[in-house]
Length: 293
Ligand code: AMP
Picture 1 (cartoon, protein in one colour):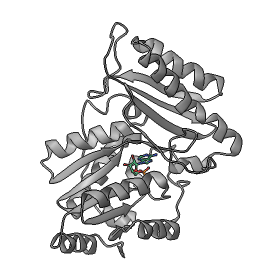
Picture 2: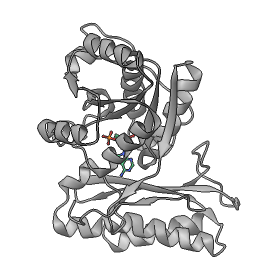
Picture 3: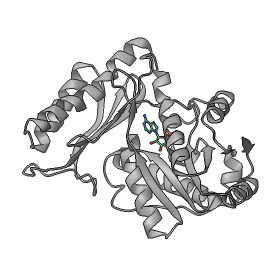
Picture 4: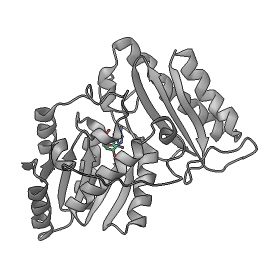
């Protein structure tokens, strides 16, 4: 496995790999867990070569967010990448991704108006900017993104289509702990008591999913099932939205959708967690991994 923190060297390495077969790419912020590794295995299934980036991108964090505290474990991450057969790992420093005098931002409209876009102003401009830089360096590839960040996946697909980037973006189902908690690097922040309360996100979504399967279609009723579950666990709700799965806009009261995105963001203690489910439920991977995240 080759590792570099130099953009030009990373570009060269991807170009070289492409001489002997296609490249699949998994961008990450590190602190890798089984969710990330599942994406990398999927990348390996789809292409001969796998490239991974590990970069905690400063421009996608708001001023009061957890950039400085974001978990970092480069040696552990490199071992994990090696264990799933990654070919090249790109680990740039912020100064080489954002050159002196840099003045370019990439943004996607409309799809970023609601959900995390509404509660994290500027977040998706940061994401689109860094992902477009990473795509430019990686070159033609299949890029694998998790549906855990459902809005991010849709935004990146829109950006790639609009900019004619030579990238096929594929989504991968959410990877969960055995008890249902969506895997996340931020789960490391949770103490055992918070870890238990964090289950209210996936449990609320499961209750709503069950209600949907039994015929409930009212968006506000589905949202209420999630909200009540979060509140009874003492989670502080950022949003709970029953939304159009393509446009991401919140469905009106009178809608009776055949398909809906149920998305949630909530604080458990100081940790902001997100989760979602597309109803009716699409196959989700239940990964058996010990409950202590
Ligand atoms: P991050 O390091 O959090 O920026 O995530 C990097 C990629 O891994 C993104 O495409 C995420 O959607 C994906 N990812 C993170 N957690 C999960 C999970 N539990 N299941 C599936 N994909 C995930």
